[in-house]
Image 1 (cartoon, rainbow, N blue to C red):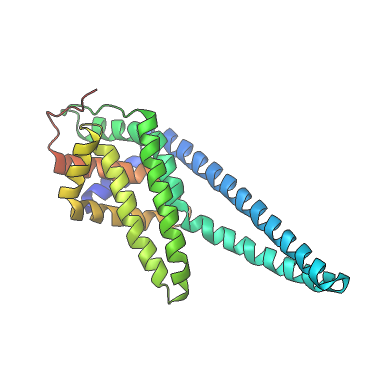
Image 2: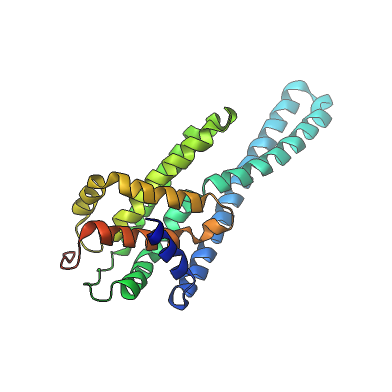
Length: 241
């Protein structure tokens, strides 16, 4: 597994994948900016509505205290948005990975498995559907784990372990579905759940590092192509049209 991870890291910076890396980073940043702006606008609206409600209830004399409280809440919300975006990176990378999974897998297979039958590209809608499901699941887990962050970081541990599961599952299945039907890919993943989860732990480690996590889709897909090759025995298996 560690050798697979080392090969994935090295190939991320190879010339064929360098352009994919920059496109992946650009798309991830764009999604983060959109999410951040959306959250900021929502929070500002809620704070403004709350401040107006307080003034209406308590009268004009409450204007100054309400303004101060609203200002403090805005600052706190800004920090909260930054923290929230960091924790939402698994969801962001799940969407980004859907766009570039096949390009990454093609390069890994060509470089490391030239004698094997190449995989067939997934329909974009299917890759996006898998990425969207993973992103939504990541958000649900984040919302459940966030309150537990108050308990000595217990929520962070839960979030890390859950991220390993959902990202390991997504990227392994994306790699496997290039060679077999979705049902068979899921069955293969379940038969090798521990190995896939160990790979997911490596992916979760990468996605938890700021800045470095922008390269998560490339690392995760490259890693799981290697893992699938070891587990799937796909030299003579082609995914049907």
